[in-house]
Image (cartoon, rainbow, N blue to C red):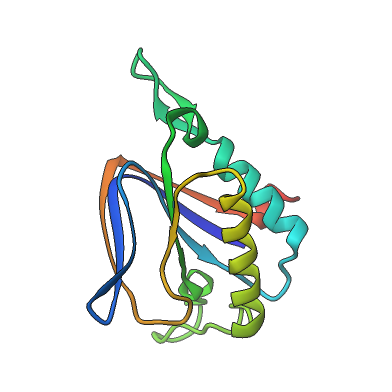
Length: 150
């Protein structure tokens, strides 16, 4: 499982001209799922996501978590995080999770986040999405379960 976490001042997702999710201050998280992922892995990833201290405190240090600052989440599925570009010029996506399984795991992550964060917005799994954001910093973190869970 991979999360690309972007600290944002605002972010939104639009599908077919309709906004499906929008937040102000918080994280935009792009989520990639592979077939080897489990609910236990998702639990660890969500716990780390919510406890990351990358918001500035009163001294300007990155020392506060999303929970501490009362931020929101915009969660967007993104199978292309598992692109394999080793051969040729067209990426292969064979490492990305089976769509049915990946959707189930994505919804599990969304549900776990909603247990803790009051405002969790989403894109639409499998849809062509237009994602807009105002990255704060810019501040972008990549969480990879292969590194987190080893």
